[in-house]
Length: 559
Image (tube, rainbow, N blue to C red; front, side):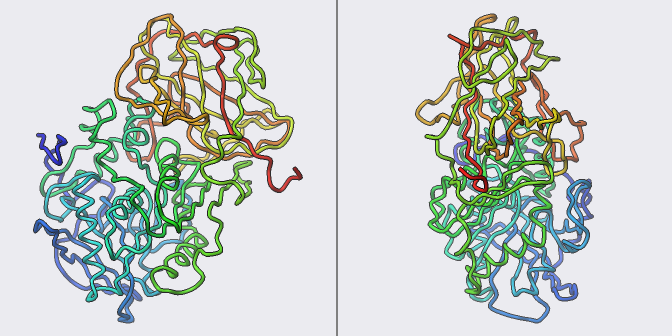
């Protein structure tokens, strides 16, 4: 079935039985009651009435002391407010004792926050679990519901009038949607890691359909007593960018309240790009960015991180402490080895384009060079082969920011090509240095990029030396055997390369990281490919394939 919402046709479906969702605890009966949990009292299934009369339900956690006039921290996500646990996926490295059994998925822990005089609100959005109405995945309806909920929470009979928002992924994206509506009670947000461009970061990477996380995300939006949006079906029906994707988030420039954003270099294919883009675009005069290279859930729940979250919200919601006033506006972790890194506060975000440099591909020598070499080419099988070129640094540098690869390619037997790119670090001894990636794993490269060749058109007015912008609004087939220049966006990263170490650029026709097809893991995959036959890759002279990147001399090494 499809319906029309805000002039955009949405494919929806009957809700899946919410009482026994796989991987989640059974849904308790809908019943307003108070439940004591030591220092925390849960007020369960509190109805909140939206402007159209639909009731959604919240669980409100309060300190058992009975303290009143407290600020609220709102956690808004689709995973079920009853879905609380003291552990996460194996491999997440969230240590025992960091979170209590009251903790919602990717949400702040009531057992920590309530004794610190906060009221926590976990809300089931419209149409999910026991909440009334029909479920919508982001977009205008969710924006209205967030506004109404925040104003309800901020009313004098329920709080001190101040609401903040905190959480990861969906719970971070909801903050951008809410803050852009400017509800009067919303005073500060702290979004940790979320995509903000539905098409380029969630649904299609460089125009290549994402097939690993999308089914999981669609399933999580499906547990309902009514109907919900069928995310996977809508994405499959829209292979080009459209108003459907653009309507999911309001303009980030509308956000003006204080914001503490945390991004990572380790979530390529999902969250890294969007959180960094959000920091660049929001209009808040008081905004801070912290970027790490670790596993996202471990970083969010690490006790030191939680204390920093509280310092931020104490300042804006309680008028207590120094808050972020002395924090650096931008704090970047520079990854070195898997367990070794440093931090920089002297590099702005976005990084300055004027300092970008180019290294040139040479398919004759298999190297990257500071100069353009003679004409050369290399033929590879698009299904099985990969080509790696290396650049050896003669001094220690930090490579920071996005990268842009211009690659001349001809598909010898096809009218399209799905190109995957990995940037890697090779130690002076010749071993690959691997980093945390995708929340659970430690075998990641420095950075990843993608492009479907038929989506190669570039919006020159929006592009830069370090990042091409593809409109993804039309398909332009290749002419078999005819070389074309592909501008491939490689997502942002920050890595230290010492003298004698190498940056390796790997080009292939499939995912660089191969994972088992397990929908219960937050893994990005691309299985619906347009590759067929061989590619010829070109470099030098008239086909100058090159990699644009930004380097900085480390600030702890003499300049």
